[in-house]
Image 1 (cartoon, one colour):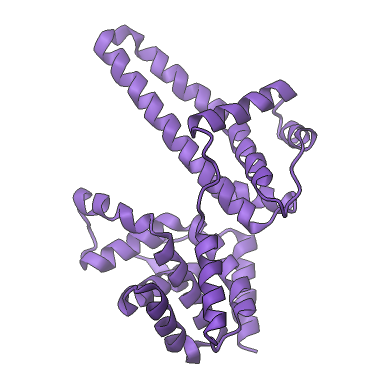
Image 2: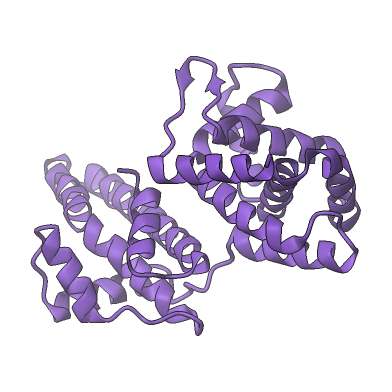
Length: 278
């Protein structure tokens, strides 16, 4: 199971808001990046000083792998503590959940896990998420008299945002290929495209535009024009992103493979499309 899907399902089980799910994913991914950087740094030092110490690098990697589930759950628990609108997940709840998966930990180990995440991120865990951008733009659209009610768009946006998180790589790969008009981008082109992947405003307008198409495709162009006016993002960019989201979210083929969509999210997306057509 994908780590992001794990976070989403765990958040549903614990009745947490979507904002907590996205916050937990952002915390987890930044933590894993920091851990990967640390492992690579240790490996370079050991290879430079004494090649016989290479096994220490493997030990660090194995330790991270063995504690991954604990760290993931700690990220969800930390995210729940950031939101005043959600219940804080207690240590007892976390320990019982881990025990159900066969992991036996103590409260001390759980606290150490949280502290490890916090220290790795310099205690900066109140991270921005795409949902904040989506909700801000929906509020502005509502104020400007958008033809599609913001409340209807919001529900669809949440479903599509889940799907974008889970299909992140194939969606952005298709955007990269479309932007360079080449099916085999170079490594340099991929590296330059990282800034696009980190652009939450672009993601937000793509999510809202795709949601508007599902809710009322006849008013789609008007919504896109509103979004362009608010953000300054080119109409073509908004259209391209919304197209990528729509084609991937319904399981469309991308070159060479069929993308997997978790059943619970696929059912939710299809239900949204069906209800919009009745």
